[in-house]
Length: 161
Image 1 (cartoon, rainbow, N blue to C red):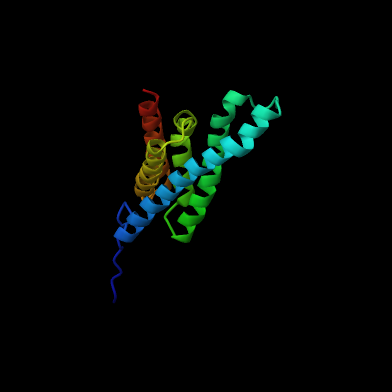
Image 2 (image 1 turned 45 degrees about the vertical axis):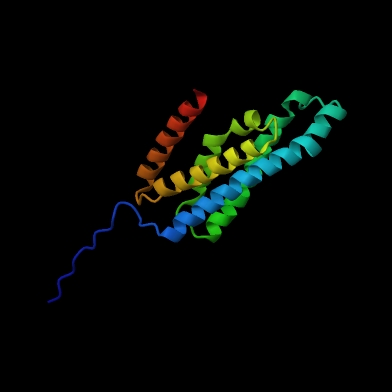
């Protein structure tokens, strides 16, 4: 008679070095695209509509924060496509957690487009995708979701200080 042993799965799915490096690069691409999209949208699209046409939807002073919000969404779509292409574990959780964590930061930082803001946005995107990618590897989804929510709240409190 053959005795079947239950195989115990680890609580956290193992991540290879390749997966870690790809999440860093995808996060950096997200950060760079966020900065570029914010600049282009605020200077040439939303800024032109708000300032020159006298639109009642967005005032001229609100062009950069609105452009940053649109840019984060557009860059997140690109990041999600790359994460799915790389077969990341729970890519939507990673993208949504990064969006919620970084929402509103770009509008205040990107009012003066400089190399420092570009570098900061790039590093924050890489950090967000890496951290949330690492914590999304927990096999039990409710536990992974709870950890992610707690991390988002902690990061938002840190950002607010």
